[in-house]
Image (tube, rainbow over all chains, first blue to last red; front, side):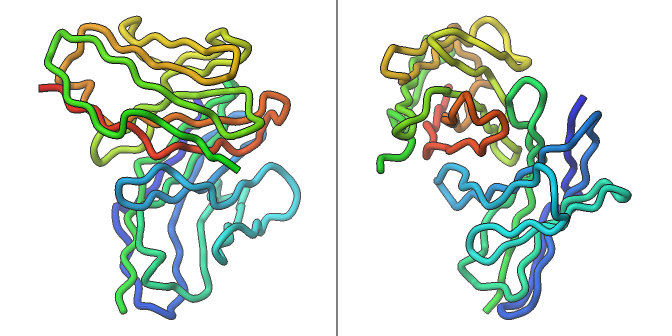
Length: 112
Length: 114
């Protein structure tokens, strides 16, 4: 079965510092991986996806993610965090059933 | 460009009752998926509709059913509500031909079962 794991419930970072939100995957075949962000009382917003090609994927709002096949990871990164980046982040994998399987989420807290 | 819309925003029901949630997909999208997000958890896939048929289904009981209309909008019905059905229900739309396209999510319907 396709699955993703987010090992950190919460990540704290100071504004202006780089941030990393971790995700590892377990997939048979080629992994199709996604990152979504959820603000309070809102639905999920798409940030970026990895299908194939370059291991560094650039997405919305200055976020990027690094696909690492040997470590089965797809970590979300941003060079300089903003207070407004504080939200709940979900890693997801596209299953053969054309659905998304989500991780448990990581709450990002950016302190001013 | 209208995004995904859902109604109602909030709903309170009693155990044993039935509920219907509604979703209008993003303009130009033809596929609708429903997810259940319990408090503190990631969304879980319920089912997906395309061409007015249920195409895929997650690990949810038959109490959860749905429908897609010719205009691609969709309904999620839950019968015999349980306390454990309390959650945020998210609708997502996409294009069938874009096999691995991102799904666009609506703001969700918060269902509380008492």
